[in-house]
Structures are given as structure tokens and as C-alpha cells.
Length: 177
Image (cartoon, rainbow, N blue to C red; front, side):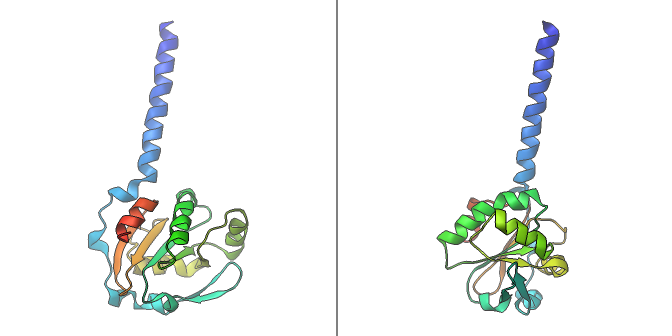
């Protein structure tokens, strides 16, 4: 009887610890201090010169989003935290059309096309492929982390960066919504 109780306690401990580590992993972005890593507006000039296509081939000049708040979310189809955060980002994009939201896929077009068929979102998913990580680095991602989210003000200044999964509350707070 004591062995059964010991096994049950061990299993419960493993489940609790595993759940705790999973929660910390998925919410690690809110514990990271990123204030010192914000790039200056002059450092992100190349962003506005970038043109990318979505999975259907429609091209977007990122300069068309100048003058309004912009959320850039770098992601990949193989990245579980990236996929997990998309419904909340999509909901925020739907409810706040005054904010531009773009997903920049560090992925092949075929993978993104397949993903979009099974997981529709309300904002454009652009194919950044090999351009994506260098662009993320210019925007402050010195860790090479995905997902990586950048908030740029209407004045063209990076106001917030998030390493790892974001949630709606984090974005609302960053955007003063």
C-alpha cells in the first residue's frame, strides 16, 4: 500500500512540475526585460523598404503601413508557441482595424499555404523565408528566437519587443488599448 501511495505521489509531482515548466515556457516573454534592446527609428529604415508576398502571391510594401501602429509577428509553421499565439493575435487584429498586424513567416511558401488552409487568421501572413531572421535581427531579435513580436508606433519607433509567445493582454498593454 505504501508503494502505491509513493508511486501516485511521484506521478503527481511529475505532472505538477511538468505543467509548471510548460506554463513558464509559454509565458516566458512577459518575464524578459527588453527595454534596453529597442532599436532606434533610424536603425529600422530598411524595414520600410521591404516588400513581401503572402501565401497567395499578393505583395505588400511594408511602407504602406507607415503612419499607423504596427504589430510584426515573426513566426514559423513548425513553431508550436507561434501557432498557439495566433488566435489571440487574430482576434486583436479583427477588433482593432486601426492597428496593422502582419505575420512574417520564416518559412517556405508551400508550408505557409498549407498552414493557412487549416488555420485561417484575420491578418496577412507574409512569406519572409531567408529575409525574415535578418529583418528580425535589425528589429532587435539578437537571440534568434521565434516567435518574436515587435510593436512599432505610428511615428515609426519600436516601442515594444517580445521574445517568445505573446498573449492578447500583453499586446493590449503595449498598445495602450
